[in-house]
Length: 450
Image (cartoon, rainbow, N blue to C red):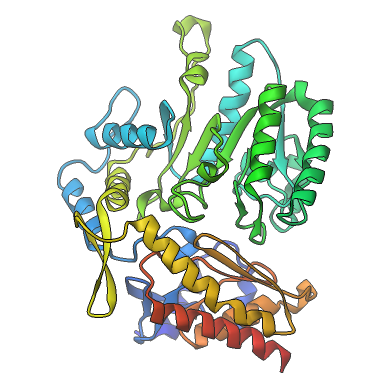
């Protein structure tokens, strides 16, 4: 079948996410037949570099042989079992590994990032209620995004997603963010944050933040000092600190988890997306024994945390997650005939995070040329996340969409955030592929001046 034939059938039945479907009267949907490594391939054989890791989930490439094999093995043993009153070896293994990796004590499983946010908010509120305190409010940051279910949307601050539903959202208080990473701006923001904490802290359960990078918030990037300062305020005023590492965890910011760079220990850490290497829906809420103990009592006290999802701790997703951690722990990059290759259980070579530093450095050096374009306002980078901010075009002109269309025509998937074009590729991307990704984006932005 041709792409156009598949698109026609698709549009007859499917309502796609984060999309004004009328756009597809002129903007083609790309039907993907298969994918390998960083490449997506449609039904007519055209290939596209997945420069955004398919919404930031893919770490080690599509159809990764090692992850594939682990899922296949699990499929022959156990595909799913209820996780209330039952357990399985994969979940026990993954929970132990995550706790050792992060320093947390307990793992609560869910299906996706938004669900993890909902759980953390409920768990924080419920903790204080079990302690005899009613704290119905939450703090979150200006420009933040935490998902699109009601609770997650409530603690976000991107009007494009939130404004329509303001009448049905839960109560939330927004804390201003620094204009940039400078010490002066950071301190100004923390002074304002202190004022807000002093005014509302008695009614606030928790503060939720995306450490270092607000991804869907137009790739705004913060300093480690800002994160440290917010954590100190939480400690001082008795408010839980929730680190939403759904998008920034698993090496995206340069360290395994973003909080490591700020040397802070949250009360809750939320993980998803890269947790399974981009294969299957799975998320976790990591927390402490101190919080767990507030729910641990005789049933008649009615303090249990009664939250559940049908596919909690699904064994196939767990198998993908364990395989992903295997690659982080045992994977080594070695140069072979001028090309870098990732091998699991190789004894010598660069680790995943070491190779990421090499890759991010190469990307940073090569995006400097965007500064020469008169319609580029700023370039910025944190680890494997790089952003090109164009000038403040009116949103109605949809200039980012024009770059997206240019990218598709030239074999690169670049999904913009307003006037932001960003790169968040799988970690296996090679220098030649980086060159193509950057050059296509450069020419696409440059063409807007013509």
